[in-house]
Image 1 (cartoon, rainbow, N blue to C red):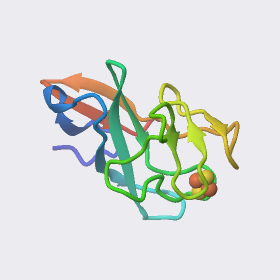
Image 2 (cartoon, helix red, strand yellow):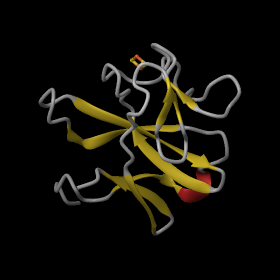
Image 3 (tube, rainbow, N blue to C red):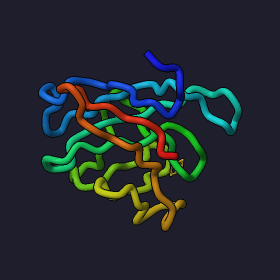
Image 4 (spheres, rainbow, N blue to C red):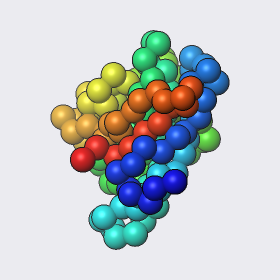
Length: 123
Ligand code: FES
């Protein structure tokens, strides 16, 4: 297995990802700022399309969720930050309401390989 931080990292078997489920994971690569902090992310199905984002709110840099696996607002339409309620579009991570409106979540590169969903940080 490569230690190259930009190498692909398996998260879970594609067949195990079900609608409404959020899979949380830790990236191999650490944050550059603040240096060395562990990076976490989450993976889910947006309709039938798998998507993955870093679990970092662009407002204050905290994780979005308080409860494991809970990322959506009460209407189940938008990803919601549990700290100040910012709402993000599941499809592209754009913040459409809240203190970081106009900013966006960091989307991770994603592919399916040998039945696994794999992610990596974008270059
Ligand atoms: S920390 Fe996410 S909206 Fe403030």
